[in-house]
Length: 166
Image (cartoon, rainbow, N blue to C red; front, top):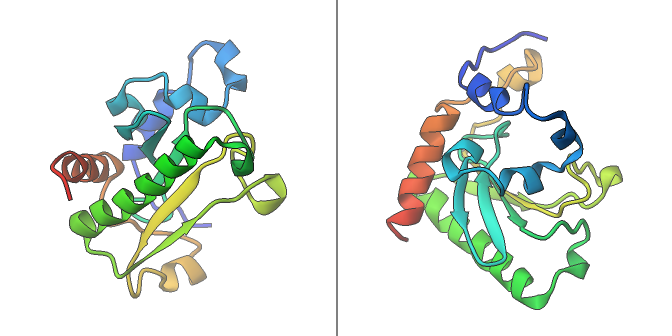
């Protein structure tokens, strides 16, 4: 595999290295919600759920929406949380449209490790902006995914649009 250097990722990775080892077993979403927004890349905090940038995005602007409660099965979420998550998905689509003008979206959740969940015990939904032609020869031939904007810059753009309304 070829390497496409993304030095902006190191700032994020540093936040998880050399920290209290007892936190190493804590789930990603439980840990993120305890950090300050800029450090954790949290775009928005609602009453029952929050929106965070994916630090290892499939595409620029890739967001994740998770409840505060540590629940892996969405069928166990209360109605208020379910409604808020649904509203946050709608808002995420609007914000990403305004911020990046994508041609479409992939929206989904992987429930359980067998379904591909990287964090199987804490339900979350991915909102991934897509553009015509964003899959190209680099991913197929070189096993490399180029992203046109840095993670921190992408976070600032999304957060600005989230705050300034849609």
